[in-house]
Length: 260
Image 1 (cartoon, one colour):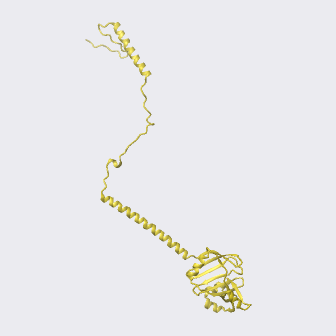
Image 2 (cartoon, one colour):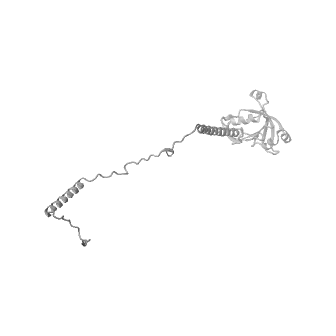
Image 3 (cartoon, helix red, strand yellow):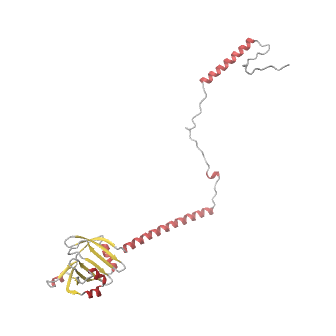
């Protein structure tokens, strides 16, 4: 018997069994189609629930520490770590103390070896005179120069190696020399203190009438005072000494005094 021929372009048709009533087959077909239609309607009116938005729900990822492997630290390792911490703290403390000591030493050195600063002086009339102080620590010289060249303000040179002080009156070309009864350290501290508390002109010096020759000035006072006073033969040099008010009363009326 030859196999049945099948047309691929032809739509399949429902097969009706042999000996089956065509009317019953049609009823079954209609019942099946009705059941499928009802199922389709149920799905249309009652859709499946939508999936929740994945972006709104935070994602939490838990990662175990050390890869989930417990790290066992021995007592020797703990002691070694403690020793390292103590050594680091001690090193930092030593460095901080060293820096503090170095800063303090630099500050003390600067305060003891200052070379220039400004201060002010008050005359007996209350006039304020600015002054400039210059110090030569190697030669032990302190030079004080006022800003204004007035009668009561004189340029001073403290020569501590010779224990002498020279007062220069530039306008009159006169230089007065007196002894110095203090050390360089005491004089330096005194002039540094005047920076905070201005000093006053309160000393009265009696001028000894006899002039000092240039040769004596060079030999006794030294080259620093000689150059400070003018370094020429036209300058007149005089010895002076400090006197009190009682001593002034017994001096001759023609005596000459200066205020410093």
